[in-house]
Image (cartoon, rainbow, N blue to C red):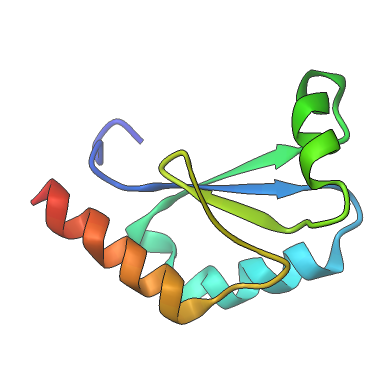
Amino acid sequence: CSACPNKPVLILFTKKPCPLCDEAKEVLEPYKRRFILQEVDITLPENSVWYEKYKYDIPVFHLNGNFLMKHQVDLQKFEEELMKLELQSD
């Protein structure tokens, strides 16, 4: 959103169906006001690079363009990285 330019962007690399991705989104739900979630469907032709890289690893998360975690949400790591970014943008 243009009103919140400093929010970190969390990219979720996913495909349909992905029960682990759904589970990960639920875990992140309490934090959703603190970041922008973008989902990338790795099965789309334009995302074939990501498909080759992550087809056996989804969900995969990148925070502000950097790899953060895969397979499941590591809340401690996520919280630490999110706080670092929030401190930088203040």
